[in-house]
Length: 214
Image (cartoon, rainbow, N blue to C red; front, top):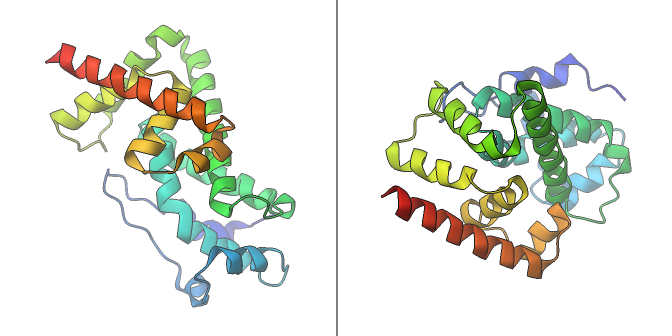
């Protein structure tokens, strides 16, 4: 199944290159009256409605996915590339989505796997050890021309970067997105009890880092 260039016109130019971005909407695809996930899923199963339904998926979930990805990889350009990869993989595998999980959960799983694979590949290419990965990402964040956060935000990001990658994922989903542990559990494949413990330890590590830095 090929999505084609026509679909990606709104996606390729989606985010302006700054920390504050604009979502470019394609009016041809905005005629859909889909408002509920169930309706979107039903339309995805219909070959005649699939393209329009998937355009709605991009419009509905793109912003949330972008920021979830960017909180992991930090750089705008990397996040934008991974967002496109996420949607391309989702489109390619849409026939295999059976609705057993929420559509948003399925998309987040793809995005999470893209992030972790990217970070592993980045460390390998740059010959960076796990111990030095947080400093590498912190340096990239400071040099990113599209990062417009203040000193407090930069300090918080540096604290979060001291966490292991999967713990960082959990912290981001809970702290920034206020996701329920049950939803996070479906995305990362970890028990609710283990997630609660992970989040608690993450908060303590971040507090210690910020206190020490002060």
